[in-house]
Length: 78
Image (cartoon, rainbow, N blue to C red):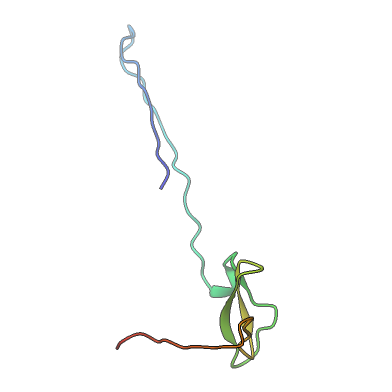
């Protein structure tokens, strides 16, 4: 979140002045493919989303790839 600071000098003969501050708005992604850290160039039906540390992005793949030769899934507790 951006911090906006303003100083108003009200010690003038005409009194305090009106100050308007415009805070930049955040862009809301409307879809997964519009995010900057998601690569969907190989998106087809049934594709999986996997993080790629080399590109520092999530990529869509049809097969999971690993550099260690081991794939472990931990879906958490439900």
